[in-house]
Image 1 (tube, rainbow, N blue to C red):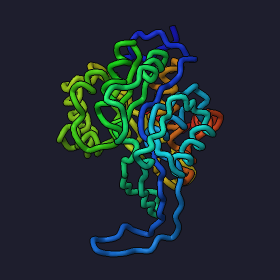
Image 2 (image 1 turned 45 degrees about the horizontal axis):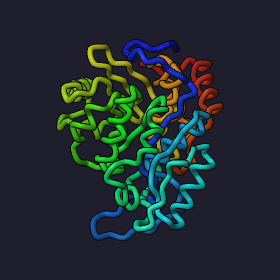
Image 3 (image 1 turned 180 degrees about the vertical axis):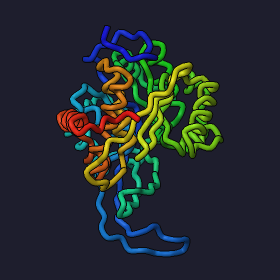
Length: 333
């Protein structure tokens, strides 16, 4: 058995088992602005471009760039945006056997308003991510889940689809990580019960629990409510404040953010963190090692504009980790 960190379930890890990412694929329409417009106001953008993105495609490309075998299960439209995403996934080393084209719906897209400090505001149009899924997930798609080391889900596709994949993974003994990002509604109990790790950011944790998350003590109380909802592990993304992993009944593992040389664009940083954590997990790193690996990947992501375009290669992540250790900036705090 690979070396597992404290709190990990005694799963027999096979580093060659693929990550299976089930989720959204969007064309991200970037507009670079000096500030967000006020109600009724029009502002001019400094620049704009369209790049491949979507939380599912982001996570799949991140895993592929980290040189881990990766499948993406998702839907695109039969249009130019769909071809843009397909090309980006293929270049990222992602297996596209289970990528479906939906003729009756356009590819999903998002308008990303990027401010000078790298922060962003995003509006999503679901398109093929939300329409055209079969009532019951295709048997061949569920078969891939049984071969996986980890299944990654997000909430930019219908909950009923996520539930079917999560339950299939649970029945096959495959861990499921659910990124809480996406629709704002409550997470169905059927989905939570099949999830091994829930990964929200601070605002998503607040929205899910109805509790404040401004201090770490408040965050801890909100996490305890998640435990009461049935999720034993919470992987919390805290942006520039780092991250934390809460395992029910154990002391939280806290991880500082690894400094970036320059913050250009935070789009996709959370997806990079979650996917890199999953790669490290299936490859048998300790939980602390998984947090450090994910922090290094996220620090590289924010240095480049775009979501998929900013996903780092494995060698760059390892070099960033070595650089942090050499400078005495070890990421725990």
